[in-house]
Length: 463
Image 1 (cartoon, helix red, strand yellow):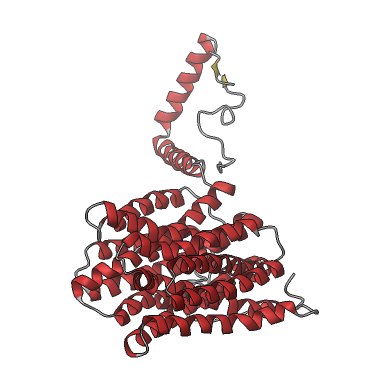
Image 2: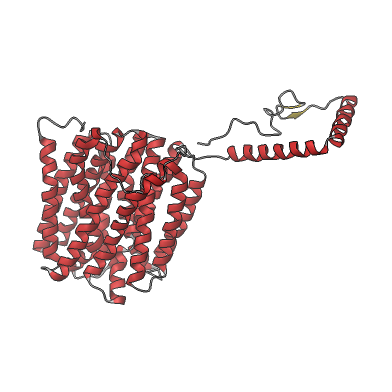
């Protein structure tokens, strides 16, 4: 859709209604009238040149403003598609390094602790950004925040492409996390501004698509094309440039208002009417993203332990096998009640993780992927259920902050347990033992929410 102003364009039929140029046809005046008109115009211009100059300048400014206001603006479904694609690209960028960690580790000789720290510092940066910048778009507008965030994301990709050591990786991850956090709140709120129902669905489906596709595309490029530590970042950089152009032409959904500086002070304020929903949803969001963190940081290493193969695509498939079914679950359950979606997510999460732990025990790669797929259903439906339980009930001016809070819980779950797991891999019982403990913790964390949802008298907030 396009957004055009009501101001008539000079030279158009509306601007000159009653003028001889009407309905696209030139209707000439009689010769005498034409001569008289030109004579009067020349006389007036020569007699009052300064005034004419002022009027000309005003006309030029009005013309420029009219043309700018008549520029096509993306709105409706095209705007939601653009915003959802931004989430996909941002989260694809975050998972793109996953297949490359083994290459980096071989070049620079770091341990699993460093791998999980490089992974976890991204989640920490997203967390900080959400706390400080998550509501900024409510005051400055969605488009300015998105353009600034995409510019910062481009910088992070350049740093990745030119990285020559762990400090560069850490720097790139910090910049990437800060820009992603700033963008996610604006994107999610912007989609809900455009269309509440479709925006809620897009908020739930796009993260899984980005997380899964980034790792797999990166692995394919590493396996079959040259410059494995450069090409994926350059491809993502080109995609971001095109998307930034789309944001330029997107209709703004927020009227700027004062108070932007106050939002930079970290503050988590949850409306009273949403607290019951968040108490049920938050543990599930933490658990599903903790599982995603394990696969994002150590998934390829687990596959290598089970198979003995260093095939990069097979390792990346562990994360894709988690994220792909998550997207399918979101689509399949999009019309189900939030209560049903949450219960499905928790049951699938517990079942899938239990099967995965069994696969590690008997060293079965096939069973490992079966458990991962089922866990992916839990990931997608658990995340969708959490979003649908809370965000649609928020007032328009609260959406950005509430969505940022849910992302804080999610990214805290993704980053902190992964770093702890990296430490335990090196200084604890090793990779497999750490995976056992990690999976058991995910199950324990999700179980209380399941009991709450199975109670005969359900919380009023969950419908």
